[in-house]
Length: 402
Image 1: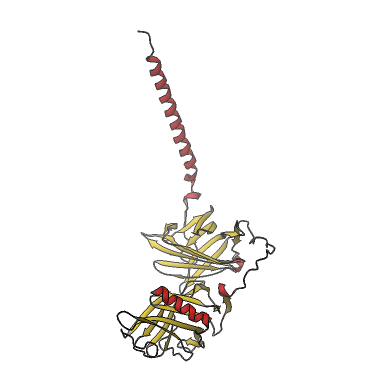
Image 2: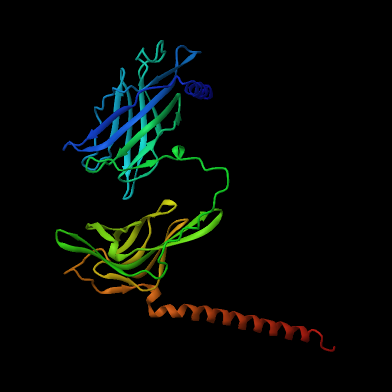
């Protein structure tokens, strides 16, 4: 039955019956500053029962004169919510989430009231019903999402067609950011072959410079870090694998973060790279638990994250030190190369590092690994040789004269 509802809604759309004026609203916080701007058109096709054997399809639009009671900016750590009301008990809501670089829509909840005889005449089961789906893929912070083409969302008994969208959450300084156009609105690539541009390269590709980064709180410096950072992105361009390297420049990298009793965070932002390091404590040792990375290059934005790890472990009250190159993979195509790492996220006194605990790669015991492997191989060779000689001797004994 849902298949027929889909075909019915799409036919109405193709015939031009699904038209409406966009609703244009702004959600403001307690200081009267805008946090959400939304202008869009929405059409609905809802299948509802009129008796035990027959159903109807109701197709209607969200009007331009909606109300936004219940919308909010997510003060006190909550998520911003866009909530519009229209008709007799019908509502359309979308809440938002974000990380250090992106925001996105989360749950889109369309609630319709089958008591509303304007939209649902002769409805058998009357009352409020909800339809849940997803809308709005990740968008860079301080950017406005714009899409004129139709986006069709399907859920049980409901089809929504959304278009003519201009939308931004987490608006800063009451000003909309630069527009990000949806893929459907972008020009179609011409069928005639065009000259292939050279594969993008990001330089420098040498060993990165070591930067010194600090996080402070009310007591002074609470987190210290010094390291060289290089991001390695594996991309596919024109069917070929391309490795793009980018060194973070300490002179253009800013550091922020937080310090707590059991957790600490270091955020580094360069012109193209944003990295977040999250630290935790277990059994009197600190360690790097989570890493989030976003890289912007000529081919767009790439992001990745790795969680529940135990990198850079050392005793609380000490600092972690490792001169050898280390690599952390945050996704299948994003890696972070790190050099000359020294970090202390807890127990900083007088703004200086405590005694360093060296990583195993730097320790004097590191050279023993190849020696141990060589010794084991030599022992196996001698064992095989002895077994061969014993077997050969027994073979000769079996042929002695009787």
